[in-house]
Image (cartoon, rainbow, N blue to C red; front, top):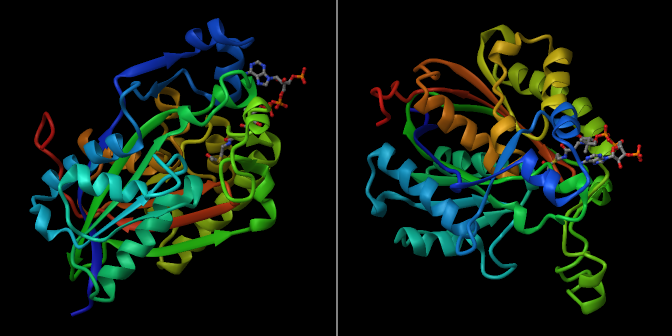
Length: 335
Ligand code: ACO
């Protein structure tokens, strides 16, 4: 029997507080009209003062574990994708592991907004090889802590949240093909310049606001709309499928204009392209598992559905996966 990895539980968590475009209008020189027309974002969730990335991760993961119906002892490995770790050291995965009461190995994967697809690859590979039976894969972000709320070109884009899946063993394919990529020559396009070993935090660095996200938005836009249609086509071909077979294309929720352009270039029916960036903003590593949980709890994913998950982000990095959905539709009111 071939060992496959399949998704057996999903969970998500969005912080209670929301920040609308009207709130941003009171903070910086911007307008709801500018933000909506350029990004499709209306509001985003923001962590509470006493919350951080591992808190959001633990909430989403606890829900995914409960839905999977497995005990805490069953989790063999915790993989956490994030761009906004609680600390540089220790890992946010370890902070989350303690909050969940787990005792398994735990590690962060940092591929920015592609982190969840990278972590899915590592988790699926651990299961397929027989090194693990049950893997918890989380994408979690408190990115509003790392954006500069005096820089209108970035602060309107990002939001906080977490999503998680539990992967289990199956004799039928769940996670099918995965294609990952990176181009480090684009590292400067999207970067937090200080706080790491290259430029440790200094008073001067902080005064220059180097601890916050800096982005060349135009270049990131061009990169995304060039790479994502190609990698989507590639992962479908690798798993022997065509675009027509897809129930859902689930792209990283960076920006509605990027997602619309990707959809147009692929010539896919917009009804089959998942979109929630309007109410979450860009939640980086969390956006794909948040989308999965939203579709699952909304009864919009059915056993046998083929879906494609596509991420892109800083690095530059990208990743695409085809997944055959195997979880049953939940009872009304969630399960
Ligand atoms: N409100 C009002 N005006 C603004 C704002 C704002 N929030 N931000 C910028 N502007 C102004 C600029 O100052 C500029 O003014 P100027 O012409 O007088 O100089 C004007 O708007 C146009 O600025 P551009 O940067 O050219 O605007 P553009 O149409 O390119 O949109 C955006 C900017 C939305 C950031 C776009 O480039 C984009 O979507 N890029 C991709 C960003 C992205 O998705 N990044 C994340 C992906 S990877 C990851 O998730 C980590």
